[in-house]
Amino acid sequence: MASEHLGKLQLAIMRVLWTDGEATVAEVHRSLEPSHGLAPTTIATMLKKMEAKGVVVHRSEGRRFIYRATISEDVVMRSMVADLKERLFGGSAAALVSHLLQAHEVDEDELAALRSQIEQVQGEPDSGEVQ
Image 1 (cartoon, rainbow, N blue to C red):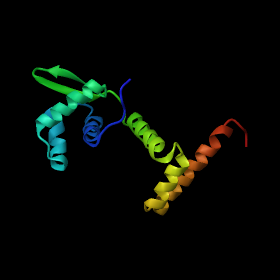
Image 2: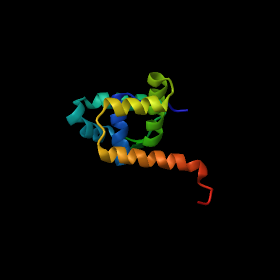
Image 3: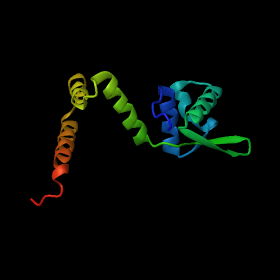
Image 4: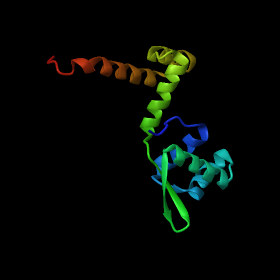
């Protein structure tokens, strides 16, 4: 099974691949250079490590390697949030959400969206009942 826990640079590379579908080292470098300022060789090395980890694969086109993600953004997000919840909040989703609400400014639109999601989750077990 591939590890879905990614470092900051790995996540940035995956975002390029998720957005573009596939990309060469040069294309990933071009996308990340303004924000990360890394050499193409650094990107190539990281992509090789990510391939060994099982989160990307490549195909050859002449001398170029074209990479694509093997796991979805949703899978990575779920895995990383679950890990964060376990490590920092003792597995408590309530503690995680409470921290986010207390430590970060949440506007009315976001609160309304959260209320709606909570109501939706609360209604799921009763979805078969006639009201």
